[in-house]
Amino acid sequence: MTRTVARRGLAARAAEAAGAALAGGAIGAAATLPFGMPVAGAVIGGLNGALGGWLATYDWRHARGVLAFTLDSSWALVTTGTGLLVHGLNLVARDAGYVPALSERSNRHVYRRGFRVRTTFAMTWGNVMNGAGDVDGDAAMAVRRRRLVTDHEDVHVWQARTFGPLYPVVYVGWLAGGGVAGAVRWALKRDHSLGGSVEAWAYYANPFEWWAYSRDANWPPRVMGDRAPLVWKRPAVRSLAERRQTRSA
Image (cartoon, rainbow, N blue to C red; front, side):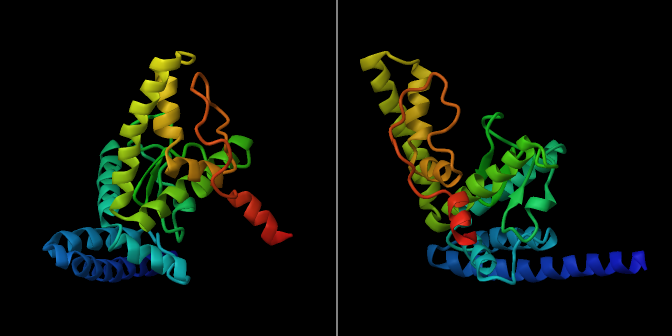
């Protein structure tokens, strides 16, 4: 009985992977045909579909899951491709620690560790989140790390889907411009460290981060250290926790 269930499970996973690969490849090719890159679009869309299907990533039963897959295969192909590269780096690392409980039918991929530019931060690349940390159990830290995934990093996943190829351009552009602004502020006032001033303007003032921290009910961020005063004083939007409380009331 166990072997039969296992075989059915593998067959179902293979069927979903094949179907999602074909659909993702077709959508990707159609989306990039006007730009003369249908093969690249098909490869990225197909690989993302195959991986997402095999790992049961997308929630096909709800419109949100279908929308996530469609955007990942078309408008957000650039960030989806980046996410596929990160999957590859995580595979090579071997200790990335994929988290099915936070990934299956959640329209995202979550790793405990994985490739990060800053190892003390969780980072999201397209539909791939790295650095979730210890998300198991009911301890306060585990609960907090799970909420970091659902209420902060997942916001970045949908930012990438919503803004598509504009997302990395605006995000990196703000990092560069904000870094310069933070350095100028430090040179004029010298009331905080250079690094703290640059980080406050380049990272924390980034509208995408302001948005995500606000959704996570974490604005102003709890740990600011020797950084300059925040550019934005109030949350950008209501937190997801507050919205959930309103719905349940």
